[in-house]
Picture 1 (cartoon, helix red, strand yellow):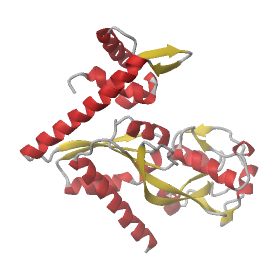
Picture 2 (cartoon, helix red, strand yellow; picture 1 turned 135 degrees about the vertical axis):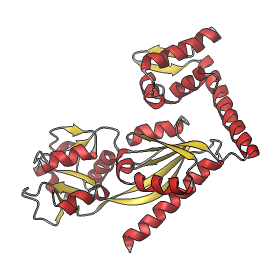
Picture 3 (cartoon, rainbow, N blue to C red; picture 1 turned 45 degrees about the horizontal axis):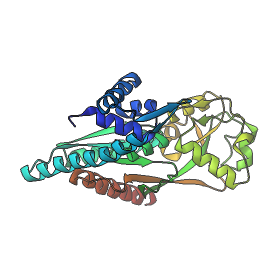
Picture 4 (cartoon, rainbow, N blue to C red; picture 1 turned 30 degrees about the vertical axis):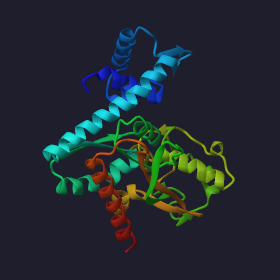
Length: 304
């Protein structure tokens, strides 16, 4: 868009945070603040109320955000219409994924998509589930694939694939000879958690609650921000953890970690997340249909 300030303002309004907006837009926070202040100077009014480290839209801000939603939507529709008229099949699509999915499942999908649609540029944004959902809600990305539960009535959430999580321990750990673990077994050893906002963490907490346990019962020496870091810490004997079985292909082949199933099993639903009302381009629909078919085929292979 020609007026970058409006896009920046609309992003801030969507997440009500200059910091989060800066992360979504790949800008510095001062740059985001500067763009919004320029827009406020043009309108000669405040668009945000700022107090106690929180922001909210003013009445004028709500009006501008309503127009911004329509303007940005019309701009996208105009761009797509011109491409249809000129037969231009090139374009850019942005997909966002939570860390586990992006690192272990999307490379194959994006590789296959690239083979069929070589003229389409696909951008990938990687963040935890909470951040990806915020990007979809703010129209910053076209499609999100997340591993945590999404409770947002403004978004379309569709099943993608079932994922099983397993406990992991070092090969010389006292539990390494076991085939499975009960939830109560987890409290006897240091447990390494993912960070707040992680889909994996929310699934583990929900599982424990279903088994009549609390997160506080676990001994948590520290939290780590990636599955790779957790696997390294477990391998070094610093504790035990729970990760997606899909992330352990290399470790199980090399026998550097031991995986134990949980009783009862811990499973989660990977989900596609899209805007409910967002104008959809042909490329966006193509990517979604391709991704959905890819995961269906993958599930069939795993079950064979």
